[in-house]
Amino acid sequence: MIWIALACTPTNIQLGSENADSESVDSAAGTLVGDSANELLPGDTAADTGDPPPVDDPDLFAPDTIWELTLELDDDAYSELSRDGHDFVDATLGWDGRTWPVATHIKGSSSWQDISDKPSLVIDVNRLDPKQEFMGVKKFYLHNDCYDPSQMSETLSYRFYREAGYPASETSFAHLTLNGRDYGLYTVVEAHNDDFLEKWFGDPNGNLYENRDAYCDVTDLGCMEVEESDEGNDEAFIALGQAARTRAVDWRAAVEPLLNWDRFIAYLGLEIAVVHWDSYSYDLSNYSLYHDPTADEWTFFTQSMDLDYGFRPWSYPSCGQYGMTIDKYDMGMLAASCHADASCKAELVARVLEYADFLEAADGAARVAELEALIGGEVRADSRRYYSDAEYADHVACLKTFFEGRPAQLREWAAGE
Image (tube, rainbow, N blue to C red):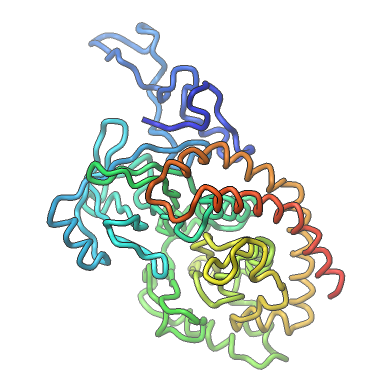
């Protein structure tokens, strides 16, 4: 079963043009295209029966869909997740009357929740069967959005990154039932696995690192967690760290050959544009680094984008307040050196101006309204959510205000540089 926005009508909400070709729902019938109660008999063809030709599974990241997913854990697996939660346990993923044997564990740091609450989860579809996929996907995340009253920050931000041509996860939504209990609405997030790397780089056989600790910079291999180690050594990472320590006068000459430079400037500019303060350049957190072995260069990935748009719930009650000062996006050593280097700073200013135009043309306030129409009912019905109806409404309104004002703020900063 699929939940569609405005399910009482046959109208689907379209969130812009992205993934428009991946529509997988027959809105008039409320069924998946290709589903049929009539099985083909020997000698029959699709034309004989009037059935449409068979199609592939639908797109897990269809932007206008809320998937109805189930997860079943036996007593031992549930107890193991209750006891620790970091290790994979066997589970059964269900959708539309079909099941898949998968592995799962709880994910997150400050957003960590016990299995009895509303945890974020890793769903590894091919861990038990290397050939198995779910809607064409081998691994994905279910994020609980415990710090985001709107439950749409990740969806908005990752989409902005992708539309700007930057490697970023795809997302959708799911309503999860776990062991027969309603766990409410989740954001479905694409994992940074080989499929993701091949899509954006063509070559997935490089090393992928993620910061394991807070305040972890590229100069410290010890605070990194190796997600992929296909190259078999850390030499390229060590070389990047050594270059990052270079004196300011020689900094760009040392680091530029090691980075995908255009993407590096874009990465810094996008963090500023959407106020992704829980990031590399502002807070030295929530980032990954991939070494493309074909091009022999590094690219940053962003992640955990539930605290964008100037929202820091434990000290600032509304969005558009925290992390808004652009000159403070210089905490990471590479970001700091860029701000201090005249040529790099000029490129960053130009990119920020580009993103001001981009945000204005994208009409973020309209996108917020579309997402509100899609998930608002699910958010309000979610008994495990962390925020009240009033807090949800306030945050949605705040997001609309943010997008209406952010382009002018970016242009004002650029004019003063």
